[in-house]
Length: 106
Image (cartoon, rainbow, N blue to C red; front, side):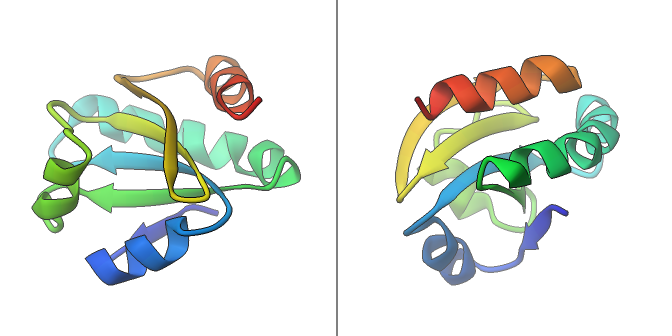
């Protein structure tokens, strides 16, 4: 299950160690809404690989969006032990998303 991050401190503490798929989104964004069921679908598969999904609302935490250079939503980042391994903007279907995350962590 994806975790909605509500503070910058919570986000920084989380990503300091471990593997994450970070979804920068907005509630008004159509492609972001399309991505919601895909994230739910891939959660069990990513959990098996040790990846947790974090969701960051760009309207509630604009400083994080700016820090990560988010120019459009959805923007997806693969983060491992506090370091960005890969990033892409836009919708991804489930299989492509899982493959992208796993290959980013190799």
